[in-house]
Image (cartoon, rainbow, N blue to C red; front, top):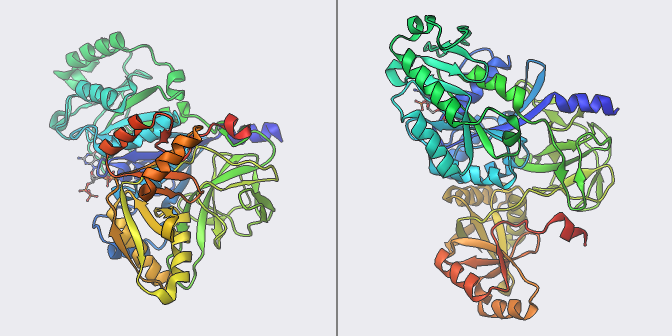
Length: 535
Ligand code: G4P
């Protein structure tokens, strides 16, 4: 068993592509699928972008896409590796979904637009990667456009994303004089050809940069390339995958996704260096992927928005052992045994029933309401995977029932929608008030629409003047009691019953942090270490 499982683990790479909208995530995804043989022509991947900011559009897009489940996970083979590419929504309002998906991957590729440089959403996504030390490869895209100077871009990545960089390829000019990239990893040259459909293959072998052929190939840019490479090799340490695997250093590639240029270099290097599934932390111990017993956790729940079939698909990341169809597993939060007759896998964009799955794989489980994000399945052991926290929302509104006859439906609906992770629900005990927190306005429209169409409940949202949620704890009972008394209006409980302070502004929050040094204000819902939990 264990040799077999190790072989399965070694063959897997589970990752996500992240970017600020429009940097080229969809285009790059498509090129990867082309290389993996999962699609045959460019243009086959539907753009999952939600461009308009209205719930009805969102719903329409969901419907048109049939079910976006099909593109939630794209598994494909490349060389002898099985790559699980997890899709993340591009729309900013769905950022929380992206954060959650990042808990289920082993590494990420970050796409940056060379014209725009590091954009705000890139910074936030990177912060989430840093929390788990997720290894990151950077792809600087759109080199066919007149972008920023590559050295400046690297400096900006280091400064804004707070990570060391190491270029593994280097562009030869850019914009309309873009000649190609020199691969610093295997010392080969690839000349640029604008080609939006084919997979570019030509690699020019040159023995050394001193080769006179180089002048013939890239003309006046040859000397600049020689100087650049000399400088890079002088400034940066020799390439070493270890700091990359520790999440401290990001290798950087340059290219043009739409022209399929520089993509294969990166994919090849990715397959070589990206981590396979690693041990993961739980409430009681570390779980290693090669353990014979199955474990996994739910990181995403996708609702079927057809009111006639209110089933959902819960996405399970396998962490250890092998997941088998029609086998009973323990749902540890509710202590219930569940088995799954039709677990789905997503190979080559096809959804099909899967018999077994291995660490790193993602399986879609039909769910009638048993799961919420972060739930763990095991073969019986009582443990709970960690590292799937909630982050502070940015917009807070109170949910107001508009149809007293339907309060039960509203209650159930909001509970289920927040279990799915559409938004976070906070309850203020006095008066059982429900405050819904999201990262974007769009979610409120989605909730309102879905409550009405799926649950028959009518609601309204009243804006609340909060800007941040902090999870609070203290050993100092007296001080905590005092804080609760003073801030009674702003103290709520999250879905797990944890105590949360809703701060009206960053300024107020800083004041409270100063005034109550005995209280710890946490910025994510997960702050106890496994050790503390065990005690
Ligand atoms: P996203 O998923 O990150 O939001 O970005 P997406 O891939 O949709 O790319 C955004 C736009 O950038 C697209 O143009 C795409 O064609 C373009 N693009 C991607 N890579 C490159 C590149 O290397 N060079 C250049 N010049 N453009 C690139 P669009 O006009 O919005 O859409 P489309 O009509 O071309 O599909």
